[in-house]
Image (tube, rainbow, N blue to C red; front, side, top):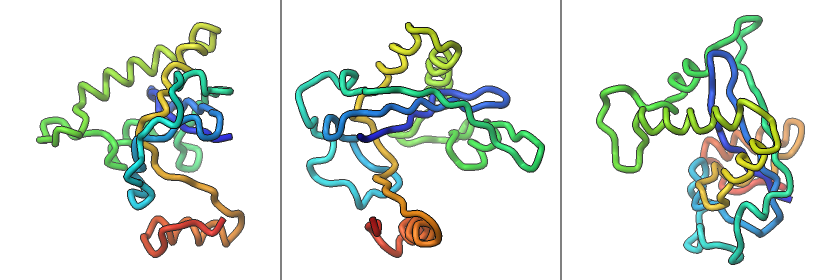
Length: 163
């Protein structure tokens, strides 16, 4: 069983994530952005001729909050500090998102995150395309070995995982 996370939206306090558990080998991401060395020439090809939404076995909606001690940190502040939100008035490449694109997706995600009704559950599962970009393929170990392995990958010292 594979799973993928989708960043849906945020408000003043929470970020909302959708997690989709999908059948193994039913979909492939278009590419990996965090570990580009994991990309292959065949990346992005459909595994099977089927509706990616039908590959979803289960979906979950998570609310997450950023904290510094007891103080809540605004998701927008964290996204800006992480360089994940485009700067206003800055020139962008054709592949980069504008603030308008981000706001449109934020509103679309907000509609999904607002309720957990049966209709919204179906809407959330329909957001899974199976072809979007993925950060990477993780099979992290546990304990110190897992921590050091992940740090080595992120720093570029190694290209594969131990597990």
